[in-house]
Amino acid sequence: MFKIVKHQQFLFKLFLALMFSGFPFILSAQQAGEVRDQEFIIRKDRVLTLPQKPRRFERLPVLPTPKSSASFNYTVQPYFLSLAPEVIRPEAAPKQWPRSQEEVFPGFLRLGYGNYASPLFEARYNFTEEEDYDFGVKVMHEGFYTGPIDGSNSGENFTKVNLDGTMFKDFFQVYGGLDYDRHHLNFYGYDPENELLADFIPNQNTLNTFRLRAGIQNLEKMESFNYDAGFFIRAFNDRYLARETEIGAKAYGDFWFDDDLSTGIHLDLSLTSPQDELYTDINRNYFKVNPFVQYRKSGISVTAGANIIFENDLTINKKADFHVFPKINAHYMFADEFGIYVGFEGDVIRKTYLDFVNENPFLGPSERLLNTIQNFKAKGGIKGVLNDEMTYEFGAEVGRFSNMHFFINNPSDSLRFNLVYDDDTRLINYTAKFAWHMDNMYRLIASANYYFYNTNQLEAAFLRPEWELSLNNNFTPLEELLIQFNVNLMGGIQGLVNFGPEEVNLSQLPVIMDLQLKADYRINDRVSAFVVGNNLLNRRNQRFLNYPVRGIQGIAGITFKF
View (cartoon, one colour):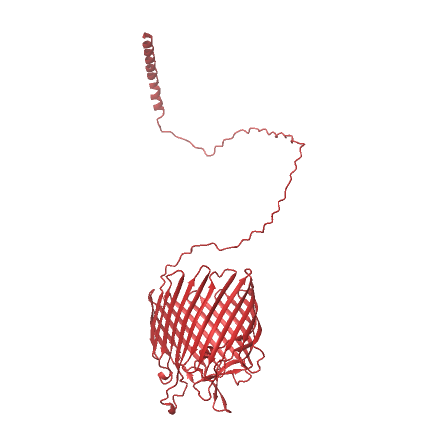
Protein backbone atom coordinates (compact mmCIF):
# COMPACT_ATOMS: atom_id res chain seq x y z
CA MET A 1 0.00 0.00 0.00
CA PHE A 2 2.88 2.38 0.84
CA LYS A 3 4.53 1.64 -2.53
CA ILE A 4 1.44 2.52 -4.44
CA VAL A 5 1.15 5.90 -2.68
CA LYS A 6 4.78 6.75 -3.40
CA HIS A 7 4.38 5.80 -6.97
CA GLN A 8 1.35 8.15 -7.37
CA GLN A 9 3.29 11.03 -5.80
CA PHE A 10 6.10 10.48 -8.23
CA LEU A 11 3.79 10.69 -11.24
CA PHE A 12 2.16 13.87 -9.93
CA LYS A 13 5.55 15.63 -9.48
CA LEU A 14 6.59 14.54 -12.98
CA PHE A 15 3.39 16.05 -14.53
CA LEU A 16 3.98 19.41 -12.77
CA ALA A 17 7.57 19.55 -13.95
CA LEU A 18 6.59 18.98 -17.59
CA MET A 19 3.78 21.51 -17.41
CA PHE A 20 5.94 24.42 -16.07
CA SER A 21 8.87 23.59 -18.34
CA GLY A 22 6.65 23.97 -21.52
CA PHE A 23 4.93 27.27 -20.55
CA PRO A 24 7.86 29.62 -21.72
CA PHE A 25 7.90 27.80 -25.07
CA ILE A 26 4.22 28.54 -25.61
CA LEU A 27 4.73 32.24 -24.81
CA SER A 28 7.68 32.48 -27.19
CA ALA A 29 5.66 30.76 -29.91
CA GLN A 30 2.83 33.32 -29.50
CA GLN A 31 5.35 36.19 -29.74
CA ALA A 32 6.99 34.71 -32.85
CA GLY A 33 3.60 34.44 -34.57
CA GLU A 34 2.80 38.14 -34.37
CA VAL A 35 2.39 40.13 -37.67
CA ARG A 36 5.04 42.78 -38.07
CA ASP A 37 5.75 45.38 -40.79
CA GLN A 38 7.70 43.75 -43.63
CA GLU A 39 8.91 44.88 -47.11
CA PHE A 40 8.79 42.46 -50.09
CA ILE A 41 10.59 43.00 -53.45
CA ILE A 42 9.14 41.30 -56.58
CA ARG A 43 11.40 41.06 -59.63
CA LYS A 44 9.67 40.35 -62.94
CA ASP A 45 12.87 39.94 -64.98
CA ARG A 46 14.28 37.17 -62.90
CA VAL A 47 14.31 33.79 -64.69
CA LEU A 48 14.74 30.52 -62.93
CA THR A 49 16.74 28.01 -64.94
CA LEU A 50 16.99 24.39 -64.02
CA PRO A 51 19.57 21.99 -65.40
CA GLN A 52 18.25 19.40 -67.91
CA LYS A 53 18.19 15.92 -66.56
CA PRO A 54 18.71 13.18 -69.13
CA ARG A 55 15.95 10.50 -69.51
CA ARG A 56 16.45 6.94 -70.52
CA PHE A 57 14.06 5.33 -73.02
CA GLU A 58 13.82 1.57 -73.17
CA ARG A 59 11.76 -0.44 -75.69
CA LEU A 60 9.13 -2.77 -74.40
CA PRO A 61 10.11 -6.36 -74.87
CA VAL A 62 8.26 -8.27 -77.64
CA LEU A 63 6.32 -11.12 -76.14
CA PRO A 64 6.17 -14.38 -78.03
CA THR A 65 2.88 -15.12 -79.95
CA PRO A 66 1.00 -18.00 -78.43
CA LYS A 67 0.36 -20.88 -80.77
CA SER A 68 -2.13 -23.63 -80.56
CA SER A 69 -2.55 -26.76 -82.56
CA ALA A 70 -6.29 -27.02 -81.85
CA SER A 71 -8.81 -26.26 -84.69
CA PHE A 72 -12.26 -24.73 -84.18
CA ASN A 73 -15.28 -25.65 -86.38
CA TYR A 74 -18.76 -23.95 -86.15
CA THR A 75 -21.93 -25.57 -87.42
CA VAL A 76 -24.86 -23.28 -88.40
CA GLN A 77 -28.26 -24.91 -88.41
CA PRO A 78 -30.81 -23.26 -90.82
CA TYR A 79 -34.33 -22.74 -89.49
CA PHE A 80 -36.93 -21.87 -92.17
CA LEU A 81 -40.35 -20.66 -90.92
CA SER A 82 -43.30 -20.15 -93.29
CA LEU A 83 -44.43 -16.85 -91.78
CA ALA A 84 -45.97 -13.99 -93.75
CA PRO A 85 -44.20 -10.63 -93.45
CA GLU A 86 -45.66 -8.32 -90.87
CA VAL A 87 -48.03 -5.75 -92.37
CA ILE A 88 -47.51 -2.30 -90.91
CA ARG A 89 -50.37 0.15 -91.29
CA PRO A 90 -49.44 3.75 -90.55
CA GLU A 91 -51.96 5.49 -88.35
CA ALA A 92 -52.16 9.02 -87.12
CA ALA A 93 -51.09 9.36 -83.51
CA PRO A 94 -54.09 10.26 -81.37
CA LYS A 95 -53.86 13.69 -79.87
CA GLN A 96 -56.24 15.48 -77.61
CA TRP A 97 -56.69 18.80 -79.36
CA PRO A 98 -57.97 21.58 -77.16
CA ARG A 99 -61.63 22.19 -77.79
CA SER A 100 -62.96 25.62 -78.47
CA GLN A 101 -64.83 27.04 -75.56
CA GLU A 102 -67.24 28.93 -77.80
CA GLU A 103 -70.83 28.43 -76.84
CA VAL A 104 -72.97 26.61 -79.39
CA PHE A 105 -76.55 27.82 -79.67
CA PRO A 106 -79.11 25.31 -80.93
CA GLY A 107 -81.65 27.98 -81.91
CA PHE A 108 -81.56 30.64 -84.64
CA LEU A 109 -84.12 33.36 -85.44
CA ARG A 110 -84.01 35.98 -88.21
CA LEU A 111 -86.54 38.77 -88.69
CA GLY A 112 -86.51 41.46 -91.37
CA TYR A 113 -88.63 43.75 -93.49
CA GLY A 114 -88.12 45.77 -96.67
CA ASN A 115 -89.83 47.61 -99.48
CA TYR A 116 -92.22 45.83 -101.85
CA ALA A 117 -94.01 44.75 -98.64
CA SER A 118 -91.37 42.10 -98.03
CA PRO A 119 -91.36 40.46 -94.59
CA LEU A 120 -88.70 37.89 -93.78
CA PHE A 121 -88.98 35.20 -91.13
CA GLU A 122 -86.53 32.34 -90.61
CA ALA A 123 -86.19 30.05 -87.60
CA ARG A 124 -84.09 26.95 -86.94
CA TYR A 125 -83.67 24.72 -83.93
CA ASN A 126 -81.40 21.66 -83.58
CA PHE A 127 -81.79 19.09 -80.82
CA THR A 128 -78.27 17.75 -80.20
CA GLU A 129 -78.32 16.84 -76.50
CA GLU A 130 -78.47 13.09 -77.15
CA GLU A 131 -75.30 11.33 -78.31
CA ASP A 132 -77.06 8.65 -80.40
CA TYR A 133 -79.30 10.91 -82.48
CA ASP A 134 -80.13 14.49 -83.34
CA PHE A 135 -82.86 16.25 -85.28
CA GLY A 136 -83.68 19.76 -86.38
CA VAL A 137 -86.53 21.95 -87.58
CA LYS A 138 -86.32 24.85 -90.02
CA VAL A 139 -89.10 27.23 -91.09
CA MET A 140 -88.67 30.09 -93.57
CA HIS A 141 -91.09 32.56 -95.14
CA GLU A 142 -90.18 35.44 -97.42
CA GLY A 143 -92.78 37.52 -99.20
CA PHE A 144 -92.84 40.27 -101.80
CA TYR A 145 -96.50 41.16 -101.68
CA THR A 146 -96.12 43.96 -104.21
CA GLY A 147 -94.03 43.92 -107.37
CA PRO A 148 -92.88 45.89 -110.40
CA ILE A 149 -96.23 45.69 -112.27
CA ASP A 150 -99.41 47.12 -110.70
CA GLY A 151 -98.51 46.48 -107.07
CA SER A 152 -100.02 43.25 -105.76
CA ASN A 153 -100.65 41.96 -109.30
CA SER A 154 -96.95 41.01 -109.47
CA GLY A 155 -96.39 39.86 -105.88
CA GLU A 156 -95.01 36.49 -104.86
CA ASN A 157 -93.96 34.67 -101.70
CA PHE A 158 -91.97 31.63 -100.66
CA THR A 159 -92.43 29.20 -97.75
CA LYS A 160 -90.19 26.30 -96.73
CA VAL A 161 -90.43 23.78 -93.89
CA ASN A 162 -87.71 21.18 -93.27
CA LEU A 163 -87.44 18.40 -90.71
CA ASP A 164 -84.13 16.52 -90.47
CA GLY A 165 -82.95 13.71 -88.24
CA THR A 166 -79.94 11.41 -87.85
CA MET A 167 -79.39 8.30 -85.74
CA PHE A 168 -75.78 7.28 -85.06
CA LYS A 169 -74.54 3.71 -84.65
CA ASP A 170 -71.06 2.32 -84.14
CA PHE A 171 -70.14 2.13 -87.82
CA PHE A 172 -72.95 3.84 -89.73
CA GLN A 173 -75.65 6.47 -89.48
CA VAL A 174 -79.25 6.55 -90.63
CA TYR A 175 -80.62 9.89 -91.79
CA GLY A 176 -83.92 11.17 -93.10
CA GLY A 177 -86.20 14.13 -93.38
CA LEU A 178 -89.43 15.70 -94.58
CA ASP A 179 -89.52 18.82 -96.79
CA TYR A 180 -92.28 21.14 -97.95
CA ASP A 181 -91.78 23.96 -100.48
CA ARG A 182 -94.44 26.45 -101.53
CA HIS A 183 -94.12 29.19 -104.17
CA HIS A 184 -97.07 31.49 -104.79
CA LEU A 185 -96.89 33.80 -107.84
CA ASN A 186 -98.83 35.85 -110.36
CA PHE A 187 -98.68 35.73 -114.17
CA TYR A 188 -97.93 39.44 -114.48
CA GLY A 189 -96.25 39.50 -117.90
CA TYR A 190 -98.74 41.97 -119.45
CA ASP A 191 -98.37 45.57 -120.59
CA PRO A 192 -99.60 47.93 -117.82
CA GLU A 193 -99.77 50.81 -120.34
CA ASN A 194 -102.47 49.07 -122.32
CA GLU A 195 -105.77 50.83 -121.59
CA LEU A 196 -107.68 47.63 -122.19
CA LEU A 197 -105.86 46.05 -119.24
CA ALA A 198 -106.48 48.87 -116.78
CA ASP A 199 -108.41 46.63 -114.36
CA PHE A 200 -106.74 43.40 -115.33
CA ILE A 201 -106.31 40.84 -112.59
CA PRO A 202 -103.74 38.18 -113.58
CA ASN A 203 -104.07 34.51 -112.87
CA GLN A 204 -102.23 33.11 -109.90
CA ASN A 205 -100.46 29.86 -109.33
CA THR A 206 -99.17 27.98 -106.30
CA LEU A 207 -96.44 25.37 -106.66
CA ASN A 208 -96.42 22.79 -103.86
CA THR A 209 -93.73 20.17 -103.37
CA PHE A 210 -93.62 17.48 -100.67
CA ARG A 211 -90.60 15.21 -100.23
CA LEU A 212 -89.91 12.31 -97.86
CA ARG A 213 -86.32 11.02 -97.79
CA ALA A 214 -84.17 8.53 -95.88
CA GLY A 215 -80.75 6.96 -96.24
CA ILE A 216 -77.79 5.22 -94.66
CA GLN A 217 -74.04 5.81 -94.89
CA ASN A 218 -70.87 4.68 -93.15
CA LEU A 219 -69.18 6.93 -90.59
CA GLU A 220 -65.48 6.19 -91.05
CA LYS A 221 -64.62 7.63 -94.47
CA MET A 222 -60.97 6.48 -94.24
CA GLU A 223 -61.95 2.83 -94.54
CA SER A 224 -61.34 0.84 -97.71
CA PHE A 225 -65.07 0.57 -98.44
CA ASN A 226 -67.46 3.54 -98.26
CA TYR A 227 -71.14 3.72 -99.11
CA ASP A 228 -74.12 6.08 -99.11
CA ALA A 229 -77.58 4.95 -100.18
CA GLY A 230 -80.93 6.69 -99.94
CA PHE A 231 -84.42 6.86 -101.38
CA PHE A 232 -87.11 9.52 -101.61
CA ILE A 233 -90.79 9.97 -102.44
CA ARG A 234 -91.90 13.29 -103.94
CA ALA A 235 -95.27 14.77 -104.82
CA PHE A 236 -95.85 17.99 -106.81
CA ASN A 237 -98.99 19.89 -107.79
CA ASP A 238 -100.11 23.37 -108.76
CA ARG A 239 -103.42 25.23 -108.92
CA TYR A 240 -104.19 23.83 -112.35
CA LEU A 241 -103.86 20.30 -113.72
CA ALA A 242 -100.11 19.75 -113.35
CA ARG A 243 -99.28 16.80 -111.12
CA GLU A 244 -96.19 14.68 -110.71
CA THR A 245 -95.17 11.95 -108.29
CA GLU A 246 -91.69 10.49 -108.15
CA ILE A 247 -90.11 7.52 -106.43
CA GLY A 248 -86.35 7.66 -106.56
CA ALA A 249 -83.19 6.17 -105.13
CA LYS A 250 -79.53 7.14 -105.24
CA ALA A 251 -76.61 4.99 -104.11
CA TYR A 252 -72.85 5.36 -104.12
CA GLY A 253 -70.07 3.00 -103.13
CA ASP A 254 -66.31 2.90 -103.57
CA PHE A 255 -63.51 0.52 -102.65
CA TRP A 256 -59.85 1.59 -102.24
CA PHE A 257 -57.22 -1.01 -103.11
CA ASP A 258 -54.53 1.32 -101.78
CA ASP A 259 -53.93 5.05 -101.46
CA ASP A 260 -53.76 5.48 -105.25
CA LEU A 261 -56.23 3.06 -106.87
CA SER A 262 -59.95 2.75 -106.25
CA THR A 263 -63.13 1.60 -107.94
CA GLY A 264 -66.74 2.57 -107.38
CA ILE A 265 -70.26 2.79 -108.68
CA HIS A 266 -73.10 5.33 -108.81
CA LEU A 267 -76.76 4.29 -109.08
CA ASP A 268 -79.66 6.61 -109.91
CA LEU A 269 -83.31 5.52 -110.15
CA SER A 270 -86.26 7.79 -110.95
CA LEU A 271 -89.83 6.64 -111.57
CA THR A 272 -92.27 9.50 -112.30
CA SER A 273 -95.96 9.68 -113.14
CA PRO A 274 -96.75 13.16 -114.51
CA GLN A 275 -100.06 14.47 -115.74
CA ASP A 276 -101.18 17.77 -117.18
CA GLU A 277 -103.87 19.29 -119.35
CA LEU A 278 -102.63 17.51 -122.49
CA TYR A 279 -101.55 14.12 -121.09
CA THR A 280 -102.35 11.66 -118.29
CA ASP A 281 -101.28 8.20 -117.18
CA ILE A 282 -97.66 8.51 -118.27
CA ASN A 283 -94.91 6.51 -116.61
CA ARG A 284 -91.43 7.93 -117.19
CA ASN A 285 -88.76 5.52 -115.95
CA TYR A 286 -85.06 6.27 -115.66
CA PHE A 287 -82.26 4.07 -114.33
CA LYS A 288 -78.55 4.92 -114.54
CA VAL A 289 -75.47 2.91 -113.55
CA ASN A 290 -72.02 4.52 -113.52
CA PRO A 291 -69.15 2.12 -112.68
CA PHE A 292 -65.70 3.68 -112.64
CA VAL A 293 -62.02 3.18 -111.79
CA GLN A 294 -59.90 6.01 -110.39
CA TYR A 295 -56.13 6.45 -110.11
CA ARG A 296 -54.48 9.35 -108.28
CA LYS A 297 -50.80 9.87 -107.57
CA SER A 298 -48.25 12.71 -107.68
CA GLY A 299 -50.40 15.26 -109.45
CA ILE A 300 -52.04 12.71 -111.79
CA SER A 301 -55.73 11.88 -111.57
CA VAL A 302 -57.53 9.63 -114.05
CA THR A 303 -61.14 8.46 -113.79
CA ALA A 304 -62.48 6.05 -116.41
CA GLY A 305 -65.94 4.53 -116.49
CA ALA A 306 -69.21 4.29 -118.33
CA ASN A 307 -72.74 5.71 -118.13
CA ILE A 308 -75.27 2.93 -118.67
CA ILE A 309 -78.83 4.29 -118.86
CA PHE A 310 -82.30 2.94 -119.45
CA GLU A 311 -85.09 5.47 -120.11
CA ASN A 312 -88.45 5.09 -121.86
CA ASP A 313 -89.28 8.57 -123.24
CA LEU A 314 -91.19 8.49 -126.52
CA THR A 315 -89.56 10.55 -129.29
CA ILE A 316 -89.54 10.50 -133.07
CA ASN A 317 -86.88 8.31 -134.70
CA LYS A 318 -85.73 6.96 -131.35
CA LYS A 319 -83.37 4.05 -131.84
CA ALA A 320 -83.40 2.42 -128.39
CA ASP A 321 -84.23 2.91 -124.73
CA PHE A 322 -80.86 1.55 -123.67
CA HIS A 323 -77.76 3.80 -123.85
CA VAL A 324 -74.09 3.18 -123.12
CA PHE A 325 -71.64 6.11 -123.08
CA PRO A 326 -68.00 6.42 -122.03
CA LYS A 327 -66.97 8.73 -119.21
CA ILE A 328 -63.32 9.77 -118.86
CA ASN A 329 -61.81 12.62 -116.85
CA ALA A 330 -58.13 13.26 -116.24
CA HIS A 331 -55.81 16.01 -115.12
CA TYR A 332 -52.06 16.32 -114.65
CA MET A 333 -50.38 19.01 -112.55
CA PHE A 334 -46.86 19.74 -113.75
CA ALA A 335 -46.56 21.93 -110.66
CA ASP A 336 -48.97 23.59 -108.28
CA GLU A 337 -48.91 26.63 -110.56
CA PHE A 338 -49.82 24.86 -113.81
CA GLY A 339 -51.75 21.80 -114.89
CA ILE A 340 -53.97 20.53 -117.70
CA TYR A 341 -57.30 18.69 -117.67
CA VAL A 342 -59.34 16.83 -120.28
CA GLY A 343 -62.62 14.96 -120.31
CA PHE A 344 -65.04 13.12 -122.55
CA GLU A 345 -68.51 12.00 -121.52
CA GLY A 346 -71.87 10.95 -122.88
CA ASP A 347 -74.99 10.86 -120.75
CA VAL A 348 -78.77 11.10 -120.48
CA ILE A 349 -79.66 14.09 -118.29
CA ARG A 350 -82.81 13.44 -116.28
CA LYS A 351 -85.51 16.11 -116.65
CA THR A 352 -88.79 16.08 -114.73
CA TYR A 353 -91.65 18.55 -114.71
CA LEU A 354 -90.40 19.89 -111.38
CA ASP A 355 -87.00 20.62 -112.97
CA PHE A 356 -88.64 22.65 -115.75
CA VAL A 357 -90.96 24.64 -113.47
CA ASN A 358 -88.12 25.42 -111.04
CA GLU A 359 -86.19 26.87 -113.97
CA ASN A 360 -89.18 28.84 -115.26
CA PRO A 361 -92.06 29.21 -112.77
CA PHE A 362 -94.29 30.82 -115.43
CA LEU A 363 -94.51 27.57 -117.36
CA GLY A 364 -97.90 26.73 -118.82
CA PRO A 365 -99.36 23.38 -119.89
CA SER A 366 -96.74 21.22 -121.59
CA GLU A 367 -97.28 18.79 -124.44
CA ARG A 368 -94.52 16.34 -123.49
CA LEU A 369 -91.60 15.87 -121.12
CA LEU A 370 -88.26 14.65 -122.45
CA ASN A 371 -84.83 13.94 -121.05
CA THR A 372 -81.80 15.59 -122.65
CA ILE A 373 -79.55 13.17 -124.55
CA GLN A 374 -75.93 14.25 -124.24
CA ASN A 375 -74.42 12.40 -127.17
CA PHE A 376 -70.99 13.62 -126.16
CA LYS A 377 -69.26 16.48 -124.37
CA ALA A 378 -65.51 16.97 -124.67
CA LYS A 379 -63.63 19.44 -122.53
CA GLY A 380 -60.08 20.59 -121.94
CA GLY A 381 -58.17 23.42 -120.32
CA ILE A 382 -55.55 24.56 -117.87
CA LYS A 383 -55.66 25.32 -114.15
CA GLY A 384 -53.37 26.02 -111.24
CA VAL A 385 -52.68 27.73 -107.92
CA LEU A 386 -50.45 30.79 -107.72
CA ASN A 387 -48.68 31.82 -104.51
CA ASP A 388 -51.13 29.78 -102.41
CA GLU A 389 -53.62 32.65 -102.81
CA MET A 390 -54.94 32.61 -106.38
CA THR A 391 -56.56 29.81 -108.34
CA TYR A 392 -57.41 29.96 -112.02
CA GLU A 393 -59.02 27.81 -114.69
CA PHE A 394 -59.43 28.40 -118.43
CA GLY A 395 -61.10 25.88 -120.67
CA ALA A 396 -63.57 25.02 -123.41
CA GLU A 397 -66.32 22.46 -123.90
CA VAL A 398 -67.79 21.11 -127.13
CA GLY A 399 -70.96 19.05 -127.06
CA ARG A 400 -73.77 17.63 -129.11
CA PHE A 401 -77.23 17.19 -127.59
CA SER A 402 -80.60 15.79 -128.55
CA ASN A 403 -83.90 16.97 -127.04
CA MET A 404 -82.36 20.07 -125.47
CA HIS A 405 -85.22 22.15 -124.04
CA PHE A 406 -85.99 25.85 -124.55
CA PHE A 407 -88.83 28.21 -123.53
CA ILE A 408 -91.05 30.34 -125.79
CA ASN A 409 -94.11 32.44 -125.00
CA ASN A 410 -97.38 30.65 -125.64
CA PRO A 411 -98.87 32.03 -128.91
CA SER A 412 -102.40 32.04 -127.46
CA ASP A 413 -101.42 33.26 -123.96
CA SER A 414 -98.23 35.34 -123.86
CA LEU A 415 -98.28 35.30 -120.05
CA ARG A 416 -97.25 31.65 -120.03
CA PHE A 417 -94.39 29.73 -121.59
CA ASN A 418 -94.25 26.51 -123.56
CA LEU A 419 -91.55 23.88 -123.66
CA VAL A 420 -89.93 23.28 -127.05
CA TYR A 421 -87.14 20.87 -127.97
CA ASP A 422 -84.40 20.76 -130.57
CA ASP A 423 -83.40 17.39 -131.98
CA ASP A 424 -79.76 18.25 -132.71
CA THR A 425 -78.01 21.07 -130.82
CA ARG A 426 -74.30 21.81 -131.01
CA LEU A 427 -72.85 23.79 -128.13
CA ILE A 428 -69.46 25.39 -127.57
CA ASN A 429 -68.78 26.83 -124.11
CA TYR A 430 -65.70 28.90 -123.26
CA THR A 431 -65.19 29.29 -119.54
CA ALA A 432 -62.85 31.14 -117.19
CA LYS A 433 -62.71 30.98 -113.40
CA PHE A 434 -60.62 32.92 -110.95
CA ALA A 435 -60.44 33.03 -107.15
CA TRP A 436 -58.24 35.02 -104.80
CA HIS A 437 -58.14 35.35 -101.04
CA MET A 438 -56.07 37.55 -98.76
CA ASP A 439 -55.87 36.05 -95.29
CA ASN A 440 -59.31 36.31 -93.71
CA MET A 441 -59.98 39.86 -94.86
CA TYR A 442 -60.94 39.49 -98.52
CA ARG A 443 -62.09 36.79 -100.93
CA LEU A 444 -62.95 37.08 -104.63
CA ILE A 445 -64.65 34.46 -106.81
CA ALA A 446 -65.13 35.33 -110.47
CA SER A 447 -66.40 33.33 -113.43
CA ALA A 448 -67.19 34.07 -117.07
CA ASN A 449 -68.90 31.92 -119.71
CA TYR A 450 -69.57 32.34 -123.40
CA TYR A 451 -72.05 30.00 -125.14
CA PHE A 452 -72.41 29.40 -128.85
CA TYR A 453 -75.55 27.42 -129.78
CA ASN A 454 -76.16 25.89 -133.19
CA THR A 455 -79.73 24.59 -133.31
CA ASN A 456 -81.25 22.43 -136.01
CA GLN A 457 -85.03 22.95 -135.78
CA LEU A 458 -85.28 26.22 -133.82
CA GLU A 459 -84.41 29.71 -135.03
CA ALA A 460 -82.38 30.44 -131.89
CA ALA A 461 -81.55 29.13 -128.43
CA PHE A 462 -84.64 30.79 -126.94
CA LEU A 463 -84.24 32.36 -123.50
CA ARG A 464 -80.76 30.92 -122.99
CA PRO A 465 -77.98 33.47 -122.34
CA GLU A 466 -75.14 33.94 -124.79
CA TRP A 467 -72.72 35.05 -122.06
CA GLU A 468 -72.58 35.28 -118.27
CA LEU A 469 -70.30 37.10 -115.83
CA SER A 470 -70.28 36.74 -112.05
CA LEU A 471 -68.19 38.54 -109.41
CA ASN A 472 -68.54 37.71 -105.72
CA ASN A 473 -66.58 39.76 -103.17
CA ASN A 474 -66.40 39.10 -99.42
CA PHE A 475 -64.85 41.70 -97.11
CA THR A 476 -64.13 41.31 -93.40
CA PRO A 477 -62.70 44.69 -92.35
CA LEU A 478 -63.60 43.97 -88.72
CA GLU A 479 -64.01 40.73 -86.85
CA GLU A 480 -67.64 41.63 -86.22
CA LEU A 481 -68.44 42.87 -89.76
CA LEU A 482 -68.97 40.87 -92.97
CA ILE A 483 -69.66 42.68 -96.27
CA GLN A 484 -70.61 40.96 -99.51
CA PHE A 485 -70.70 42.76 -102.85
CA ASN A 486 -71.84 40.74 -105.86
CA VAL A 487 -72.21 41.58 -109.54
CA ASN A 488 -74.12 39.34 -111.96
CA LEU A 489 -74.39 40.09 -115.67
CA MET A 490 -76.12 38.15 -118.42
CA GLY A 491 -76.68 39.00 -122.07
CA GLY A 492 -77.58 37.78 -125.54
CA ILE A 493 -80.98 36.36 -124.48
CA GLN A 494 -83.48 36.02 -127.35
CA GLY A 495 -87.19 35.53 -126.98
CA LEU A 496 -89.77 34.48 -129.54
CA VAL A 497 -92.74 36.75 -130.28
CA ASN A 498 -95.18 34.74 -132.38
CA PHE A 499 -98.23 36.65 -133.64
CA GLY A 500 -99.48 34.03 -136.06
CA PRO A 501 -98.65 30.79 -137.81
CA GLU A 502 -96.50 32.51 -140.47
CA GLU A 503 -95.09 35.51 -138.66
CA VAL A 504 -92.12 34.88 -136.39
CA ASN A 505 -90.11 37.61 -134.70
CA LEU A 506 -87.10 37.40 -132.43
CA SER A 507 -86.86 39.80 -129.52
CA GLN A 508 -83.47 40.61 -128.00
CA LEU A 509 -83.78 41.12 -124.25
CA PRO A 510 -81.73 43.88 -122.62
CA VAL A 511 -78.53 43.01 -120.77
CA ILE A 512 -79.21 41.88 -117.22
CA MET A 513 -77.08 43.69 -114.65
CA ASP A 514 -77.71 43.00 -110.99
CA LEU A 515 -75.65 44.59 -108.21
CA GLN A 516 -76.15 43.16 -104.75
CA LEU A 517 -74.84 44.34 -101.37
CA LYS A 518 -75.07 42.48 -98.07
CA ALA A 519 -73.74 43.45 -94.65
CA ASP A 520 -73.88 41.57 -91.37
CA TYR A 521 -72.66 43.10 -88.10
CA ARG A 522 -72.28 40.96 -84.98
CA ILE A 523 -73.29 42.99 -81.93
CA ASN A 524 -72.48 40.19 -79.48
CA ASP A 525 -72.40 36.40 -79.41
CA ARG A 526 -76.18 36.22 -79.65
CA VAL A 527 -77.38 39.24 -81.60
CA SER A 528 -76.40 40.58 -85.04
CA ALA A 529 -77.92 43.02 -87.52
CA PHE A 530 -78.06 42.65 -91.29
CA VAL A 531 -79.02 44.63 -94.38
CA VAL A 532 -79.50 43.38 -97.96
CA GLY A 533 -79.77 45.44 -101.14
CA ASN A 534 -80.72 43.93 -104.53
CA ASN A 535 -80.72 45.46 -108.02
CA LEU A 536 -78.97 48.57 -106.76
CA LEU A 537 -78.93 50.09 -110.26
CA ASN A 538 -82.76 49.90 -110.34
CA ARG A 539 -82.78 48.25 -113.77
CA ARG A 540 -85.82 46.57 -115.32
CA ASN A 541 -84.05 43.30 -115.88
CA GLN A 542 -85.92 40.57 -117.75
CA ARG A 543 -84.82 36.97 -117.40
CA PHE A 544 -88.01 35.89 -119.21
CA LEU A 545 -89.71 37.89 -121.95
CA ASN A 546 -92.35 40.36 -120.60
CA TYR A 547 -91.44 39.65 -116.97
CA PRO A 548 -89.35 42.51 -115.50
CA VAL A 549 -87.97 41.87 -112.03
CA ARG A 550 -88.32 44.12 -109.01
CA GLY A 551 -86.34 47.37 -109.02
CA ILE A 552 -84.03 48.44 -106.22
CA GLN A 553 -85.09 46.43 -103.19
CA GLY A 554 -83.73 46.31 -99.65
CA ILE A 555 -84.32 44.35 -96.47
CA ALA A 556 -83.00 45.12 -92.98
CA GLY A 557 -83.37 43.04 -89.88
CA ILE A 558 -81.89 41.32 -86.87
CA THR A 559 -80.62 37.83 -86.08
CA PHE A 560 -80.85 36.22 -82.67
CA LYS A 561 -79.28 32.98 -81.40
CA PHE A 562 -80.70 31.12 -78.44
